[in-house]
Length: 325
Ligand SMILES: NC(=O)c1ccc[n+]([C@@H]2O[C@H](COP(=O)([O-])OP(=O)(O)OC[C@H]3O[C@@H](n4cnc5c(N)ncnc54)[C@H](OP(=O)(O)O)[C@@H]3O)[C@@H](O)[C@H]2O)c1
Image (cartoon, rainbow, N blue to C red; front, side):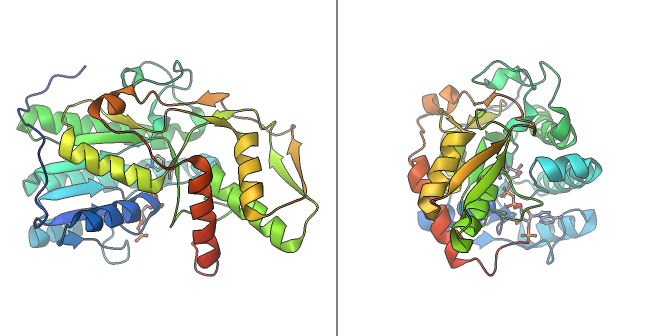
């Protein structure tokens, strides 16, 4: 456990304060924005990557100096599935390091009171004991297909811890499991497993295809959290948690890829056969976060997987012509 010099008691955040949600159009950022708006925050600030490229350090510093946010959630990042991560490792390392460094440095220079940095469960070692506890961080080798991305995220956690140690600011980090929901990336090249399956089954249902073929055996176990639950957890942590250690955010239970495929087939109305291409790799057999720390803080997920998939498929249908490509 890292040393710390923060003496802060978490409290209700000021609804009138300027709150910057970096990445507010993305899966996580848009859910956090909705959650904060519902809680009554009336000075939310967001910028698209076109309006403010967070890789541009000077522009980020100018933006912070002009808007002077009191609170910041850093949900902007270059994010992708296994294919994108293994094809463009330099981009995932370099872009994410720059985005984090610029935002966290500018937040420090402008005395931002509370920052929530978002990492990912891929920061944990490939062979970490399941379910994965927070203290597994930096105890072993990473999964090579996304190690560049993971190293950038680990650097972000350490920067937050270092700011706490050196400046005594109550900044925190959260590590979500696999997320899904509105505004997700459904593109075949960039998506994660759940949105990829939604698109595949929905297209098969529409075209009347007789079968859908998925990679692997369908037996690996994965945990999925709806982005509205994630946003609720982030808001909860900002008002109730303080500490140097990152907090895992998940449901605490997992399903097989086969089970999630069956749920998605049912919700999208696909009645054909699901085939499994066992010549393709399965990936790690299980990935489940230990969420007892978050539970002990008083938060648990509320949205069941079936309900969450249903809501996401509804959103997908409504936005089928304007989803990210
Ligand atoms: N999705 C998951 O399953 C998952 C799981 C664990 C952790 N997380 C973490 O949650 C965070 C958000 O992920 P997400 O799934 O919400 O990703 P996302 O849907 O792809 O959204 C990322 C957002 O970041 C913004 N962004 C990217 N590059 C930028 C740049 N150079 N300048 C300014 N903005 C930039 C994008 O803005 P524009 O839309 O304006 O381009 C986008 O809205 C990430 O830190 C990720 O590691 C996600």
